[in-house]
Length: 495
Image 1 (cartoon, rainbow, N blue to C red):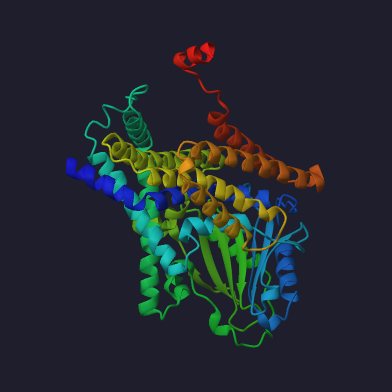
Image 2: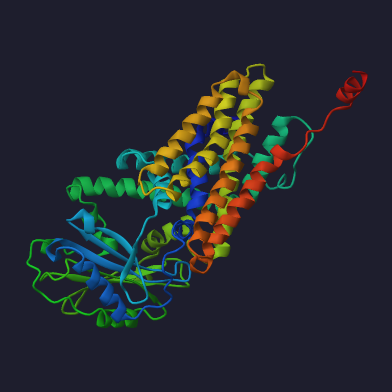
């Protein structure tokens, strides 16, 4: 058992900082739809869309640039979680590529700008490193997390018996160990699911990239066609002389083949070309594999259907892995549960490394520099992520969140290098995080109110309120008055 515990500690130490960052960003990415609404609260709200409106929107996208340059156009339909009609175009002309919020008539009204959400998702998935390197590191961290969950259970044979044993008031190491073990025990099913699905997604992308490199000459689209369907790239050079068919017949055929599903998206690949294809995406409001897709040629012949319900259990699990990992099923209540349990994984990671540091100090081998660097990791990252969101309120620069996060991270670690910060670093970083969260919420609310309260998405106010509540929670230990010992009171009275 001691060998298992030693291996558990070594593995945790090796990946602790990366795992903590991935768990922290994952807890936020659960709410990515809400964050996207918070970023652009003035976007036109659309509840329902008719096929004719979809056709108008896709036609408007094609007319924005040269038709021969348009490679694909798509419409993502409103849902209860995201009441917006989003039109997207991919074109050889970058000026006319991107996504737009459309009004109820289907006309593009506002360019979609989700810089903060995109930054957080990228940081969680590949740490904003080059795709191959970042994906491999995150995949290995997922495998390490899964191994830590399993080895943590094996290293504690009394894990169930001691499930409610929490020693407080004793040594710091025992209190931290009990907190680490109890949180790990109470959230064990969730932690295992998140670790397993995270490891699976990381390994799956690595394997898929290897298959694409060896079998499909690096073409990820071809490698993924078994799940996503064929593409019409072969028609890219064909003249755009064909009419684009209306979407209504394709929508009717796809929904008839999947009863109970609702329309999620309509996309046209190589619109106007002889080999154009129309893809219909459907959403299952009840099942865990949330989507189905069907692809048709311009004559109405179905050339692909995902048919998730008819696939083997293993293939169904592949489709279900992503919503299961991120909590994108079951509505807001499930998201809140995922967010809180994700923060519990952050706490387990933080206390696990702290236990090792405290054990070293108890044995007379303290590592003060490592202690300060770990404190800068635990409380510097929430500060850096908050700072990353602030520039998006005043600038459209795509790289602004990444630069602000990097600046906050460097500042936190720079403070940790100062020996004078040994006892004050945690409090100062917590205070700075609370101030940044409060400033972000108030500044965003003020900007939103300036656009007219009635035009602001209610979700925007909810996110601002959540930021203020989080700021209060973070600042509470800092604001709590310190208790003065009787000896110090007596000394003060004498003087």
